[in-house]
Image (cartoon, rainbow, N blue to C red; front, side, top):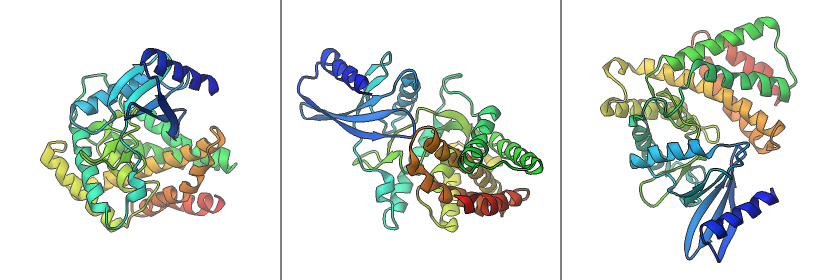
Length: 329
């Protein structure tokens, strides 16, 4: 990557007239993107380094402008170099939600995050601006659990009968997602992608994979976070509180008032996400050399075990995960 650093410096110096500046790593994420903090003439910026052969900055720019236009606190796009895969962005700081969530802060921080989520879901981008979270994508994501966690990481292959049951369950989970009202979905709305900011909290990042999809997807991503866990009773209280906000905001209609239906949407959507996430964490280790995420798999699959036992037709999945996957991690 030294060549990319040198190309980045040339862009800053030759195109943006940055003369005296500092350039330091800010963070990386679960992709091929890297981030650097640049200070210049007393101001702080973030540079996204997204190699064009691996990443496409255009999706980030599209979603950033969509969210910025409705008043959400996303990084300001100051300059862009899509040909080389660089963006110069405003700096939202380095205070992650995850680092400061606790019993004393959670109500306030989640309150802000849920209010921001209503603003995301009220957005109405034009036709074709965001891709649909369709059956093909939902199924592809769940296959990551089977292929990367069970197959590559654990070296296991389910018997044919179990494989058929798993495929049938994937279909059930996809149907649940497609039956819900469809809204703008951030697709990774959790404590590592929300920043604590002094005003207009939270700062929102890592939204370039946004789609049009199920109303409960971002909600369960936040409340059943792969990186921090809260008691079921509190989570369901927050989820139903959001249902009320969504009804008041017009995101949901009168026919969506049933709390049992909403919690079923929420629960099954979480199972889909957590199967996907567990597969992604295994892939990050084996394909991308990022083993740290393996420690989050037991928590992530713990949600699957807990939820599956409460819903008709999913009990066997909970047993499969608890008896044949979790003990081997």
